[in-house]
Length: 83
Image 1 (spheres, rainbow, N blue to C red):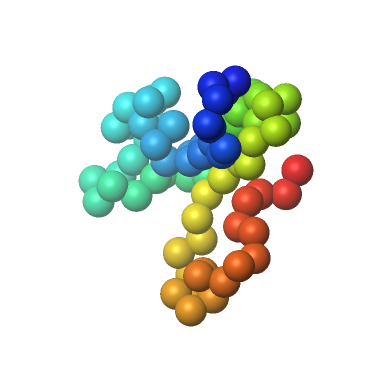
Image 2: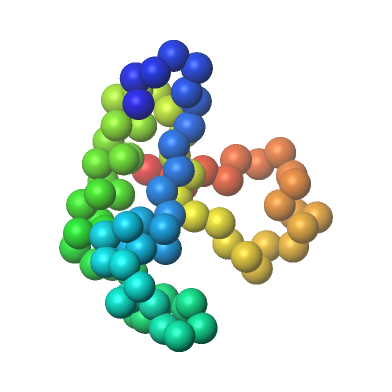
């Protein structure tokens, strides 16, 4: 993450769970089975990404919330996760 020009990093539990566990953590309709972000391996990787963001002064995007209305999502408020 110490690459010039990089300003943010993103971590998403769904994509990362797929890379760690494959399809076994997803139901037939593609929905995750359980709270993936709470799994110990997932927490370890998330913490590493957060720590590297802090070390390199990068913004950290954890996840999007699909229930935010489109009119609100385009506001100028920061949507990065709190430390």
